[in-house]
Length: 519
Image (cartoon, one colour):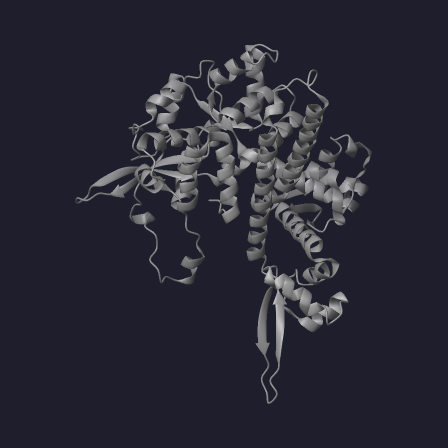
């Protein structure tokens, strides 16, 4: 599960307020701050009536911001259990609302312009059946008939940009004897074993297997008898086959949720492709265009979800010459470019690239640029000297960075005061005790702080955008032809401000993804 920060929560609430209003945002904020809750507890903490909480949860589920699951709990009597519906907020999916324009641009660039209409409908409405998707595309007067729109939809599913929605309310049963968590005080091997949270179990149970997740059924969307038999036979022995009736089944019937599969945008695929794009652009900026072409070709020739890519030199060359930029390269040119990449290793003419290493290098450079802009070039050199994590004393830092020893403590104190570096006071033994300070960087803590600062900046930009639009809302609907010169100037100013704020927010979001989504 994604961990949010204080300003990350405020940004998420702001996005929900803008799109769905105050009541829905109040329910969402309750889940963001308190974690997974039942409907009764949400009503208690928000002081909202049950019907408003229920409708708010429907809206959040419809737009993929909340996942419900049925939790089996021990009852009051002996050998009895009760099932309580729980609601967990999906923080990542809320923040993804900032990136809808990026997702649409990425899909149209990778496929064609025709996919925009289908994708836009899913981004706006959250979850739709195929019938609803096609009807909306036909009503948009964008051209094309039902068959062409269906082909476009199939293309999106085949490229994994669109997926079937997860189960509405998967059942999380009580752990069996073999699944009972280990008691505290066990051996070291037990400590190293990562515990699976309840939310992670619920998400894993809700998401269908890939064979079903990206499968397209018949024209009317109803599974055939053979498909039903296959699904039934796929159930594990002892698994409950009787589906529990959820309280919003009637509403899902209205939306076609039972009779026809419901589809949504696959955010994971978009993030994976944006991560690859960021790695390729990093290689281009740090090395040259040839390095970017080769890295991009390696990633295209493998599964996009893998963090580490390994290919032989011949396989890499085959992928490189498929692109226009790679047609002019020969085998030796590819080999020499691979050898200069710091994040690439070679064993027996097989080259391996770890995307995690690239992202970590890009993260460090992003923080260094922040330090340079905020504290100056001397602080930047000091921060870089400490970036390997090894503690250094004040004099050694001064010697390594060529900064005056009188100024060095002042700069280090500023960085320490803002939690960019950590300080430790050390006292030497002996007859003449002396004190000196060791300085170091704890990346995990600092990266979390940087992410919160980025959320804070994104929130400020979003609030400024809303303020600018509200301030000049009365002139937006005025015709530019008959408007006086003063109104025309105000409209031009508002247009420039919106473009500037939009572009700044998109650049800031690139940095947010670097620290939150790409690792």
